[in-house]
Image (cartoon, rainbow, N blue to C red; front, side, top):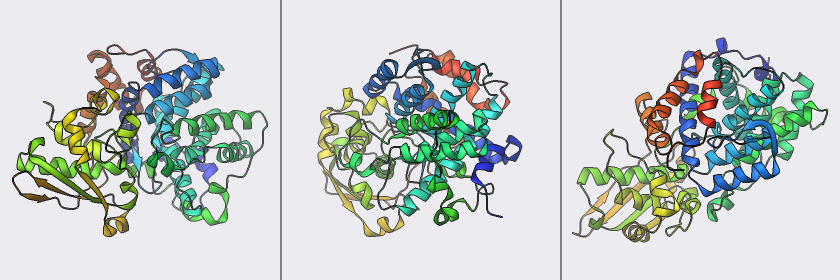
Length: 457
């Protein structure tokens, strides 16, 4: 019998999750908490939070790291766009996008909507299970979408469907109503063109907040009797192959994590340059030319002189140059490009700009052929003394080929969270995330994420 996505959505329990799936989902939740803090630095986040208050007012859910109350769709919009505003959240190769951002945004908003209706917040176990289920639905919808249409869409396009699925699960919608919710979300979700935002970087980003909002609204509409079924990425015969391993192959296990707050495609050349810098003890002044060979889509990230953080995040030359200039490790051993390197206040560093202008970005047909199974880059550095250094084909830390340990993920979280939160709150939030499966309620996690920042806001 073929797997049943709607039954999977409603009937999967914590006991059905293998231990490694539980653990990986916990890792994703921790990483997303850090991404929430990173995004809070951006002007995009401030605009969208104010917009949610003005346009999506209400008393159903909380704006994270803000405290103001809005409607559930408004909270999902703001959380999703906030995480998406600084590109350091989990990623999935096969769907060519990000799943956790819209799942986390929608799920927190839906959980609070339930409390506005008199239902207690879910337990940590229930929250973790819903996230694991959501990753499977999200990634399969994304793969089905990109496998059946010609354009490359943002994550919000498929994130809307999985967000609606989480609404159906948490609100206990029946099978027929769930079908309507998924169909509404697929139809109204942002079928936005990803390559447009890569070629012309703006605050539109990856559409994740809009997808989370559309999914929550789709669930609310279906609950009220609005119709919209079917969702073709779930029900059409031609997409059945993407659902065939449902319940036995878990998409959450395919999530990669980032060290740097820039597009996933820029991570390999950043790591290649850092490896050469450390191996040969290079200084920025030593480098006169940088040739980067990579896959075709990454060549579109050719924005060497960004004026906004969005342009810096959708760039290869600038973060590569920033890594060369600021490539020393912290005392805890962690190195990543974060808000301090990629927000507007750091974009006019003279040496970084010089090195970014030295970058030649070239497509390598063999690396294009390997994409999206592998994201790779080769870097050649020409030095002032005449030496030429060449990296091997390089992936990046946090990828499935070179995953972060739990300790490394914890260090990354503390690096990001400590930029706006006090040490006691950082420790409490980390403990709440790692201990989510045993928590009687997600209330403590939600409270720690909801209050305004402690420092630097």
